[in-house]
Image (tube, rainbow, N blue to C red; front, side, top):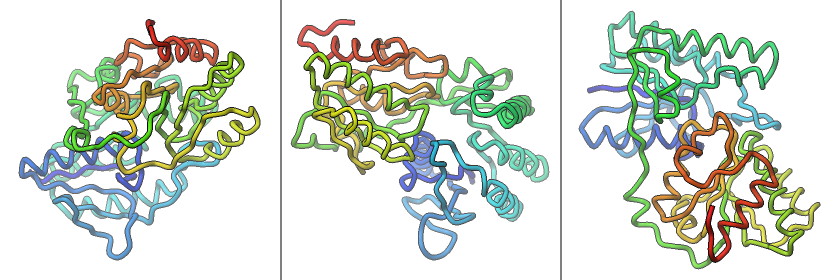
Length: 334
């Protein structure tokens, strides 16, 4: 089959969960002799087309910083991306188009193209925000809520990447896609020559609540407990977190940019901590567990990670600190 995957950000240039899922799914399908095309931003020099690992990448517009200084996704070039996507999809016939839901506008473009060209079309849902949209902005949040409801109502195949999201799909024509992790790379990864008590990895954005983790570490420090902690990632709030560390005088905490092989680090820690308010699945939770690491997360309504691990605490700094202390103790129980 000739298949098009639609998602603007491309792995490994962007290292989010959706990007990695699209990449792993593309690798899996090419191994089955399907012809896979990914339509996203152009992160590379030279022409708009790039072939790598038997995947054809289409760079529609130059890549740009996706997140504002507040950690929210920018939509400034969404219409330019959508315009070029429309032009490119109209040029080629695909057997199947899979559009990954965010940032929504491409869903309606792909739907129109699928009607015109009579190809199969699937919307892949990684999150369903529902009324959480109103958290962003009174007016824009309402618009996002309505657009999401319209997309969910389209008479096409709807697929979810986790049971957590699958249960929220209103369509009867819905499917649960399998979770994907890179087991080959995981098995081949060698443990780094260091050990950590705690690791966090992810984008430094508001909903990941890294500030809550910093507050929890501060509460532990007040008890003279200083777990060796590594915070891996980049993002608009990274500098703020480093300043918070210095302001609180926290010890034994290191920061590191995204690493090419997270598995080598996961194999070197006792505990992976994910204080996130929002996760559609949380691939990093599955990856950490596959590396033999316990995962501690928080009980937030939109956090799917809480369905994957038995170690769940209340969504507060105090509860997180208590959870860390219990799990790091020699006779850990929860």
